[in-house]
Length: 347
Image 1 (tube, rainbow, N blue to C red):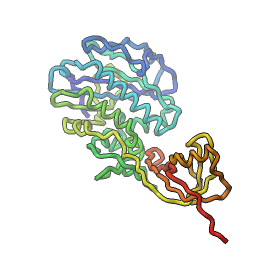
Image 2: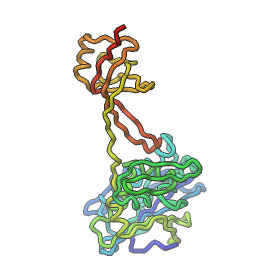
Image 3: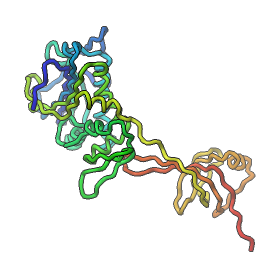
Image 4: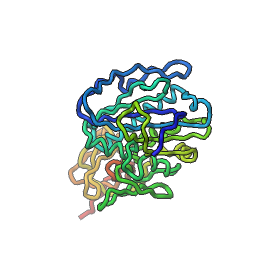
């Protein structure tokens, strides 16, 4: 446990684990009250906490050796970026792990402490059972040995390839170019998304760019009282070396793999008006195909090529493979480069 340093710039997040609706004046996606000269301004929210509610509080803290952060000053645009990206990280992670139905909503209110640049996020829990695993995987409430922030640091510029899950445990192996990382399956799935890695990178690095001896931390509060200076438990702690590793985080996945193959096919669905919407039978399976053979398609349009059920074609196909981190499967798409009707042997 450690206390939040008084010279740190703090951003507090309050996670409301309840089904009761709160009155919050500002949704984080509506954040726009940025003042001039780098001064961050927000209207005081009208948060109603009269009803009893269970809360989870965490704080992200930026610190450095130079005067600005020591004096609680941070560029308004950089702070707004951190707020937006934390919201995007939480909302996207929820969607990845729980589907389209949200398990929480994210709100923001002005800091309660006079003279502070802290910004409080209030996340209203719509489904705590689904929400808490998301927050643990992201790394804002603790509970996992390795979070998305930790894995992002360990990636250190390596390119993401795919993930391999374990049937008898919740662990998964994240495969990179040149190394592997083991983590909880939820963390592995989240880190497979480029936009999630992009949010982590911006949250950590944008506010600390060009600052001396930067530090980034996430604290989980041991109390629900945000007015007190209670003890905090670190869930993430990055020094200058770790922040540099995050700055090198590769936010792109491995490029799609394209191979050319020859095969005997039959057409099972034909579109006389467009190059998409076709289907072929390949190796006993029906698959969609895009027509890239202009001469072949021109003959179709001019009605100089007829099709009969069961006609076979010698085809050259272009197969593109992409890895889907959510389903942990490789997906294939096909394009027809050329096709020539297979001649039937003479009797």
